[in-house]
Amino acid sequence: MEIKQQLRLSQQLVMTPQLQQAIRLLQLSRLELIDEVRKELDNNPVLADEEVGERGRGEAGIGARVEPGDREPHDRVELNKESRDTEKAAREVDWEKFLENRTLQQPMPAGRGGFEELPPIEQNLTKPNNLRDHLLWQLQMSDFTDVERRFAELVIGNLDERGFLDLGGVEGPDGSRTPDLTMEDLAAEAGLYEEDAPIVLEMIQNFDPIGVAARDLRECLLIQAKAYGYDEVEVGIIDHHLHQLEKHNYQAIARDMKIALEDVYEAAKEIQKLESRPARNFTDEDERTIGITPDVYVLRDGAEFVVMDNDRGIQRLFINEALTKQLMQDPSAKEFVGEKLRNAQWLIRAIEQRRKTIIRVAECIVEKQRDFFEHGVAHLKPLILRDVAEAVGMHESTISRVTTSKYMHTPQGLFELKYFFNSSIRRVANEDIASESVKQAIKGLIEGEDKANPLSDQAIVEYLAKNEGIKIARRTVAKYREMLGILASSRRKRLF
Image (cartoon, one colour):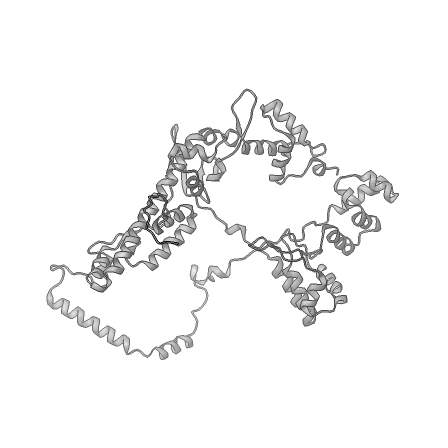
């Protein structure tokens, strides 16, 4: 045990607060950047959203300057006297009496033209139907006791996006999972007898839409079939042969139920009219109000494509020099103003660097994906982050941050910058093709297929190899088909 001194030379990267802020600004989306700028404007007094000089907004708060030739001295004295009298009269106003008279005034007569007679626009706005609110409204209109109402609210609160009752556990941030719930758990939490829970649940399942709060597809279809008066054959198929119905194995259903094949066909037609997703016509967010503002525009100028940034809506920041000089006159505020001034200068520089970086990356994407901008998605080339990083002289992590939540408006439509990065699929006697182009080719084939005889995954593989020269495995076709939300050929087959 001894105390001694050692000299050591090491090299390490120090993440200063300014560097952390620059990295954070780089990965912000457009809306997040606008909010960040507004927050900085509120917190930093030396920042201004318009250019302010020696005679700018900093002096406007003290008093507007009057040129010598504008007014005579006695006119200026009279003006000051008149303004003082007006301010004195304003202070002497009985505001309570004024407001009382305003409330007693008769409303303006109707019949005036123009926009004044229209109600505020907020009263004309509508929001999409929300399944939870729709069910709670029906619950309020129903004759439930307080205990039953609490149980019903717990059931409605545990519905998933399909409208099914989901009592599975929830995974926490640390990876742990809560235990699954049961109907008895909900009844105990609401203070309801266990034998009454199925009765209350059945009443909820007969709310509009019929079949809501079902625990699986079979129960959902059975509730609808019984409510609509389906016969025993149709109810029996749903209850015992739903898996065969999904595979269109009607012969097996007919053999097991000992009925004619035509009866199975007719029953299948009726079952197809039932709703498999009770929450289909309800949504928690209004998709009509979701808008995307592009960060960059790609415009065609003759034979070239020009990249332009979109600074509309983003406030430009300036240093309020007049206010800064006034504050610096106070010795006790010099340190505070100096720190705010350095932060403001660094923020302005970081935002400008962010804009330049996005433009450079967008120009590189346009250069490497020129065929896409001219001819469409079928000519999208394979591209990875490393290709762009090497071209612009940046790290791959920087390119990843730049392309996150950033959008580009092109002659082919609006795309996220990450859309242009795709893995490669090998082609025979030709250059490789992007995986996104293969997905769109698969989608086009399925959309144009014969619905009575849909294409299998192996048939798609053979068609792409023969006509497009694309070598792809059947499991890859199945993976892309699932990513596009397309069912297998056996479930796409349309018999009726």
